[in-house]
Length: 111
Image (cartoon, rainbow, N blue to C red; front, top):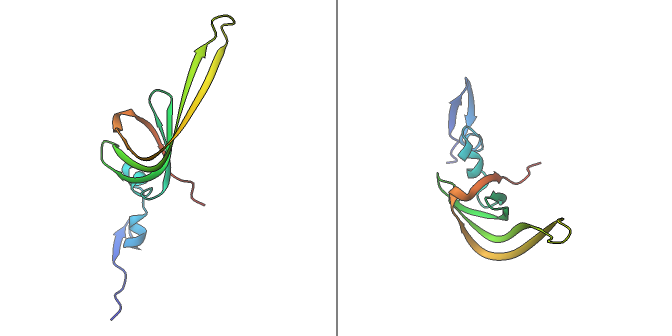
């Protein structure tokens, strides 16, 4: 016997549980919807990472896979006093990100 989808009431109308699972009601819901997707994370210290979000917690500690980390540094030339911007990239298979270093999390673009 085929089971019908579970239905919940929200704002006076019925919605399926699948629809309920994609609803963003609080900030961490946006992170939850990005599980197993590639996300962009900006960190303190001019560091940026892009990778597949495998896990997270309420402190925004995250485990990312197939990560590309970009570190941007600005140095001042001693003679000309011009800013020299250097970018260093590295690839990391798995990375644990401590939540207190996170300043921004951007989910993948959805079309």
